[in-house]
Length: 246
Ligand code: C5P
Image (cartoon, rainbow, N blue to C red; front, side):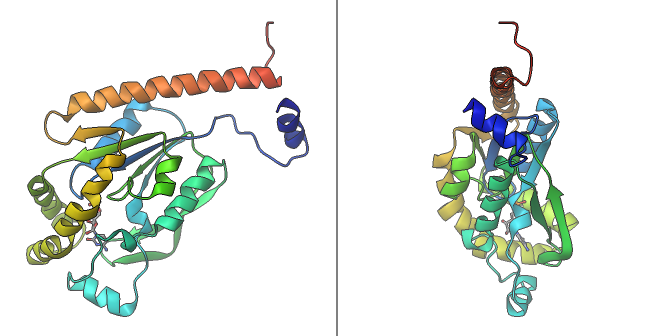
């Protein structure tokens, strides 16, 4: 192992970054359950350089003209797992896990479309947080994750949060939001999103008492990252990148 790693580095075939394989955290749960705020708390508390927060919202598939027309009438199903390009999401996370550069699409909820000629390039990561309603749905993505968190909340609470957000930030009206919720969001949340809870290692109740659960998770993540970096340092010493006292 030693000789292959060192020789491939010398040959310039493989770049060994100063960090280990990224630690991947998936955060799933219904729309409006509070995934983003749990993700933000984790990111700011662990405070590790090269932490990237990726939303599955960026991976909504581009629509045909007819599908966009329906989307503007709140008659397009954005809540079925097929609405999101999970193949592309998997490819991007896999690239990062393998230490390769990746490119993430930018999505506009106002236009119901990818923003043309715009993407976010990510050149590497030590921690990846992937959040989205279907973060814990796809087996391939789950297999890349070190920690799987489901953020749970009553759908009534989710609807209330979603209404204010969609009207203020996503250019929607009250009637359309409720129509979309009843026709697509709620049935899919019951059928598919909730089912992904079984893939979680931890479930966060997204009510006022979620602080303890999030704190416990943050402590767990910090411990895992510390172990990971200690192992990485030992491996570098073993490979001769740092002088060993022995
Ligand atoms: O951020 P959040 O997890 O709530 O985003 C997922 C939600 O975005 C889905 O429930 C879907 O109904 C909604 N969506 C939308 N319009 C789009 C794409 C997604 O309302 N163009």
